[in-house]
Length: 242
Image 1 (cartoon, helix red, strand yellow):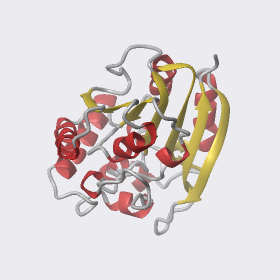
Image 2 (cartoon, helix red, strand yellow):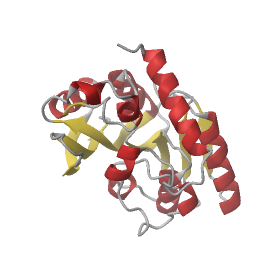
Image 3 (spheres, helix red, strand yellow):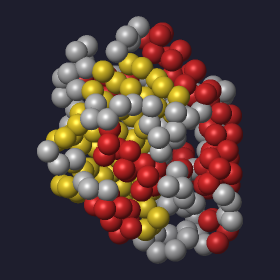
């Protein structure tokens, strides 16, 4: 059984390698290519920032308004941040958080190339976000919580960072039934979100236990992996009470 730090080191190593590659999913994780959705029709989409690592379109469902402060957890090369920036506009602010230095470097380069001065990328662990409390109107994340062993800890951090009345929209992988042992033990599958997945009922229960209300599934789709069933991509919405 891998320790929390060993899992984090594995994920950091995998995603550092991807960040150093050519982008647009050309050398992304095998399972991610199966799960990723098409961003290309969304305003603000930039192909240089799309590494094909997501499992949904959380920004499409996030109800972002002009002037909102938006935080993207596990921001990668900046894909969801740039889509969120198109929603929140010049008067808003977008903060991307990622714990892989190579991803932060790539995202900052993309933002500079696009001339965005209200999109910021901070290196840090989403279990201990480099953000003050009660600052975000909206939090989004795309296939990232499954990479974190302490999912409840991240949800508590999301609760802390959101303003009262703020909300999140998160795309992630959940299970219905048990994964085969070889999938659970696969480093490639862990870095691709699958091996770190938990049961859907447990996932939703953790969100409720963290204090959120108005919890609902905005989207759910099965993920087809040969000889494996019971894997789903979900996009979940929830609110921090006023």
